[in-house]
Image 1 (cartoon, rainbow, N blue to C red):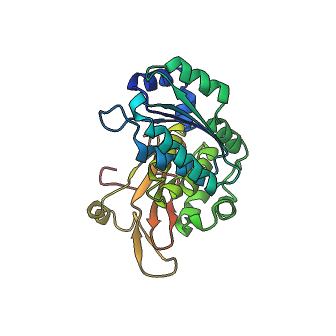
Image 2 (cartoon, rainbow, N blue to C red):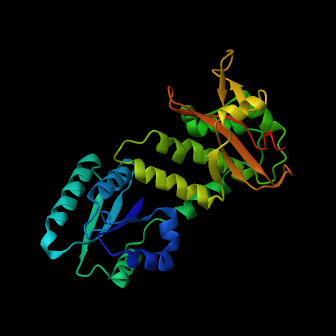
Length: 285
């Protein structure tokens, strides 16, 4: 995994990056680190968290494009200290630090990014999607094989999948993959990698055309009977609310509208999917 961090520059540089390197930014392979507040100084804590998060995720090569004022040379030493610590955590990590003379040097930054060649994660996602099964017959087995105890399909979700009319089968697999990977990483983040993992989850959610939100409040769930609750742990009389969902489409036609309802089991650190792939009833339906 090859990642670029752009840090210490004026805000107009990121606007130029959005024009020239949008795909890299959207995929998370180029990460913009804004300055601290309204100052001209690198936000060290944000950079540190993002950098160590990338190391923890298996980054192999990192380019840091850095600007600092002449009288703040200590920032370069601070960055180098973070880099050295990263190398102790990952023996094969290669890091290149490029310093710039101007905080406005968009062209120089873009040239360095293109020469470095960050990973375009969208391409990897497309390749992974191409390998997804084209039916939901083996969905439960696929989840176990791919995500083990990170992601669990409740029996009610398995039954829902058997009746699915949703036409984009690959998206169902990709959405579950999102929950078992980026969402799980976000929920189990340390302070150091929380921001990076949140960014990666949001980036991939957007790339898939999905929305992540609260499914229903506890008070409104009571109006729907047991629609928004599942027995959990399975086989007990205890109930858990399906608090969140991933969504795509507003149509009531089941072949065009996707809903995946789930909750987070804090004790076992896993995502439990309780229903898919169509709407559960709300007061307005």
